[in-house]
Structure formats: C-alpha cells, structure tokens
Amino acid sequence: MSRAFTREEDSENAIAGVGERPISTHRNLVTERGLAQIEDNLTDLRDVLAKAERKADRERIAVVSRDLRYWTARRENAELSVPEPGSDVVRFGMGVTLEGDDGKKVHWKIVGEDEADPTKGSISHVSPMAVALFGKKVGDVAAVNGKEWEIVKLSDS
Image (cartoon, rainbow, N blue to C red; front, side, top):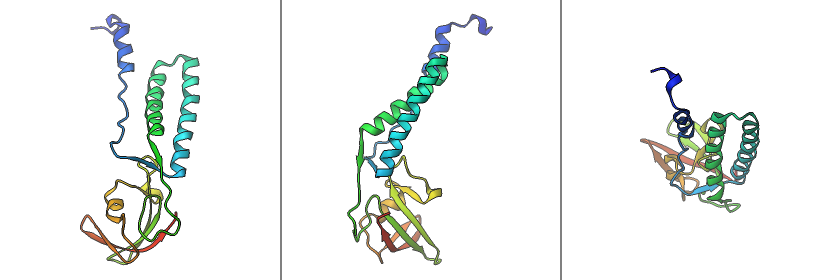
C-alpha cells in the first residue's frame, strides 16, 4: 500500500512511541559532580526542546521530551553522597588504587550509574568491582571474575 494512504495519526503514534529510557532500580547515589551533570543535562535539553518546538520538529521534540523525563526522574531521586574525609574503608565517591596478581595497578573512582565512565577511571557503585570493594581496607583483597585485586591506596577522589 502506498504511504499516501496511511493515516497521519499512525505516523504521530510512531513518533510518540519513542521508547522510554529505562531507569535503574538501584539507589541513585550521586557525587557532587554527578549532580552537576544531571543539572547540566536538564538545562541543555530544555534549550534543545525550545529550539525543536520553534521549528515544529515533532521527532526531535519526542526524543528530547523522553530524555527530559529521564533526567527529571534521575534528579528527583538523586541522593548526594560524599565520603567521610580520611575514611579507611572503601565507600561511594572514593578513589581506590588496586594491584592485580600481575603487579599491574589500576585506579577507580566509585560513582553513580549515570556518571560512570570506565575509560576515564570511574565505575558505577553497582558494578561487580565496586560491590566487591565496599567496606574493605588497604591491604584487603577483592576477587572479581576470578581475579584477585589488592587494595593499595584509598583517596577522597
């Protein structure tokens, strides 16, 4: 059938049917930087939405509106968590330097799900590595995926 005979209502439903972004069921712990990132995303998306509305770009409006709903929900349930200075156990928001069996060292900062970026040295607090590290001290060993990592240093960042 020719597209000329499709109802406009059907194409509107296709645009409106932009899937929702899934929201994690885990606590939405955030660092100060993570909270600022959420606020920045909301500001940027509001600007983009205003531009899309001026252009009457329905598809862009649908996508940006979906993203706004996601970030608004993340802002509403965000829980700012700042580690105690000088803590001697691994907590959310801390940096952890680990040494593997092979002597290789890695450094991870444990952050919220939305701000985690392993390529930049940050991991989500719900990742297997972070879960294995929580509550441990320098000298303790954490096992993840069959590999052992010794905690060699903790930092506030």
